[in-house]
Image (cartoon, rainbow, N blue to C red; front, side, top):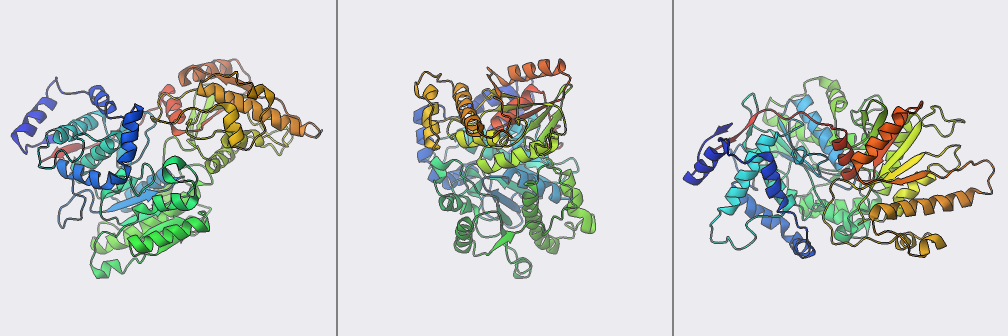
Length: 564
């Protein structure tokens, strides 16, 4: 690492980092975890500060030396920013933007996303790869020490250390601004994915952006973002702001830098359009299916729904490129008309329609957790597993298993109904077994867990006497199991008069851990003469847990921090 000193105190800290007594990655993680709001009082206090997030983030950035305003000739990582919000596909869209920028334009990229699947370093990526444990540790400790040592007049205006997500965002900004790649270059363009919403999100601290995109909107985090699509669209549209200043000639090259997908409903698009006009004085470009990404293009991220995300990514980067090419000859397409196609083929995003082939099973992992995304997930799983229920019998004899978990903050009934109804009027159940098991980690919550009957009633489902008696476990996975059995029984009962349908109950199991469940599945698969297909879905947390159990790892980014 190349480290130079600003002050005596920072010099001493950097000397410590270089010795054997330097804080290691585990120590940094343990310190970071102390910034998680775990108890109800802390969570409540954090929620009260939500609307102050942007202002408070800017103050924290000032304290660690990260500019949030455009500064001429500053040569920071934030001279050019692409910012993406949405409910579904924003991480995938970010990853495709990153791939195009790097492979088609030769740009050095910085990418910040959330949540992570296995390691926190996944959130902070350089040229598509997560930073190393060492780089994370140095950056985290440097940011932490700068914040703790702040002694300005307004030091009591907010807590010395921010909460978990804000802190990680600050660490990402610090890494992006101080990282030097192996070729001596700095970051050319930064891509930011919002964490929750957009308007009051920690990633929304910068005054300007070169491009802003809003992916498909759906009902998620409604306790925070609102119960209507208009309220959700307003929250997401908070990222729409003025563009990074360019001279008039360059600004005229691209009229619109705000993009959204045509799949969004008219009510959502109306809100996005109004916010764009008020906040950034820009029109909204509606990205349409098939306009820039022909069917002949192969996309590295599987699933038909990813084509819409690819359209958005290409549109955003194409507009970015028009301005940047006018500024510098550096940003010309490397491969002419095939450039985007080649870049999209190389795009990858873990935990989204990802397949891991093990000795006896194939793990199909997707972090779907809304009704729309579950529909896409089922469609993808049926395609890649070779399950074609319209054929009699299905084309491939196999064992199909579902491993599911979702947050107790959402009602799982509509999600589980999707899987059960996928077997309706088909000759074989979509899944032979279903495992419900807890993730290795989850987001802290003040929301209490609801009983099965309450969740069923909330979804408008008739509750059978066996559920109404109230003799159920308080374990969330038992709740999911009870709901599944109830929904399946209702489905079988409704089909009893139809002799063309052969329905059987799915074997439902509750596991103590993801590692235990994977071990049991692989043990059974080794004894079976049929291939085993396992769909893991319901949340990114359960997907991350299965990836960890499968010992899946990524290689780290090269380069080093240069702190002056």
